[in-house]
Length: 454
Ligand code: FRU
Image 1 (cartoon, rainbow, N blue to C red):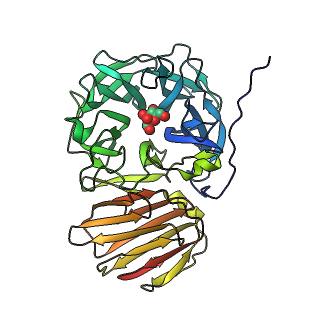
Image 2 (cartoon, helix red, strand yellow; image 1 turned 30 degrees about the vertical axis):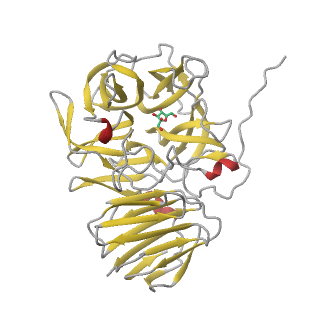
Image 3 (tube, helix red, strand yellow; image 1 turned 120 degrees about the vertical axis):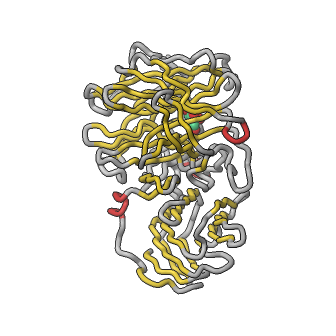
């Protein structure tokens, strides 16, 4: 009897498909993986399940691009099954003219019990950047004895002729941490240090997913997604958060001296970042444009999940700023409106568009509304408490953050059918949101004097 061949799920309704964001051609996506540059192409991999619009045994989906804007979907790079039950998140580096993927092998122990598993680190390689072979010597790294089963998401980078790996882990005492390893050949690894570790559960969590470590503008930064932080006023309102520790790496001990954890995006739909150092020296970040508790209405249409636009990072005054990569400008078409915006008037905004605004003399009450009549997003300054508040017409729709400058500000808003990304004051503050517009959008600036381009 012939084995039943599984069929990949197809998109059945295009209503929420995004115009310029990377998504699957059908099926589920979560974290970006293996963001790299090889033989003239940017490569992006992602956690992928091709057979349903739900999370399942993890594959690595694959796309490439010459400009970070137009992505071409390639064949699946990694399929679980022969060496592991899931190919979990990881990264990619170029070594000896090959593209190497370093991924977590996730292994279930007790059938039917998702909490019974172990994890280790593995390699796959490719000469053409399309077809990948798992390394026969896998796994290349097993868990140390002072660790629980949580041991995943390797981010590897090269310094001279040494490769380093930051790895997400939970110490045996139950606290989240990032481990640092090094290797000369990607195949044998030795632990260098515990790069950083949570001081307590409430503020820094029990497991640090997707760590990424880099130096930018004179600061050392550990970007990661800790699990288990408790909501604290406006902070930590999603199920899990993504943010960073910023400080200085001690060259002797290889530990990071740092301040408190800061969220990098304050919206509902942002998780599991990964960065690349581009050939021209920019630090560019992408994230999964969802969270584990996002409703993801596109599931009904045969797909789920997308990545944010690539964002260039800079550090200014000890804080990360984000701006959409300049390559996105090539998508601009003739402006529908350019100049002063009349306060209180409604402007039509296509469901795929960019809005650039500079607003002065901002008063009390709602500053801006975006609505299709049913789904509404508002931005409101809270002058009394120095907060900037986003509201989405959904359950638990409010997200907010402290913002120093509330009477005048710049806003860059990227709208793409079922997503809105907002960059406030040169990306000091960002909100990433999925909002499922099903008709054209109207924009109103309610207070202040605005100049803008739509
Ligand atoms: C983060 C994460 C990773 C893991 C992957 C599994 O969203 O939980 O820690 O490798 O997703 O899909």
